[in-house]
Amino acid sequence: MTEIGRSVPRRRVELPGAGAVVLAWGTATDIGRRRAVNEDSFIAEPPVFAVADGMGGHSAGDRASKAVVERLASALTDPTVTTGQIGIALAQASRDIGTIAEVSALGAGTTVTGVALARNGSSACFAAFNVGDSRLYRFEDDRLTQVSVDHSVVQELVDAGALQPDEAAHHPDSNVITRAIGFNEPPDPDFWLLPIYPGMRLLACSDGLTKEVSDRAIEDVLAAGAPARTTALALVEAALSGGGRDNVTVVVVDVIEVEPAS
Image 1 (cartoon, helix red, strand yellow):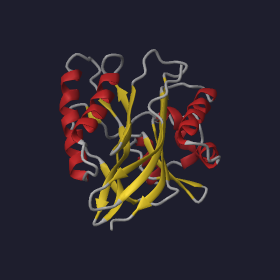
Image 2 (tube, helix red, strand yellow):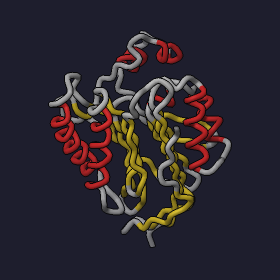
Image 3 (cartoon, one colour):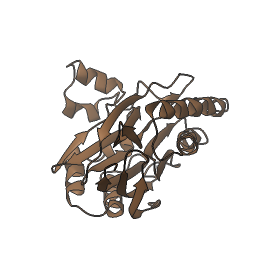
Image 4 (cartoon, one colour):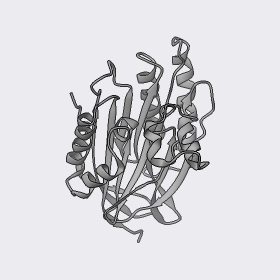
């Protein structure tokens, strides 16, 4: 059964020194059709919106992903945050996961991807971050663009020219990632600063979506212009219709207005 998280049609968020933004967002998650446990977690509350996909099996993977979103929630409480603060929160989560892994023969770890409200001088922006193969997309001018870069064996093969992008999803190593939070390794996140503008739409998702639904099909759902909650539900339903082989989690964020600093 699909679970719907908090859906906010509109909220004005004050960003001291950087004006204000009006955001809307919606979330949805589903265990899928083949898994016994949902190892995905998410956070969707300013200043941070993120998805984590846990690994390690029941009582490990789900706790690992939860540890990351809990650390992000507890550490990122100011209206705007820095990439340094995000990095510290992920390092704290990694230590938490180390304790979880002690009771799991497989170890424990998680991906994480998302954005947090930040400042670039006196302008508002999003600090985007990623570890693993969950993805962050931006939808603009009726086109879908992947912001994050997968940390995976398959992506490395694509980058090296040894594999075509359309072959990646069917490669036998498609589930092998090269970075994660946990597994006794220090976090190594990628960061980007994204300007905020009215009409901006962002999508953070676990690979339960992208393994079942093509980028073109995701683009079509986002282009329909439905509210964030409706869009999140439609994407999850598309993943289930495509086979639902994994847990699937979606966070959709819309920028309604941007008020510059006075």
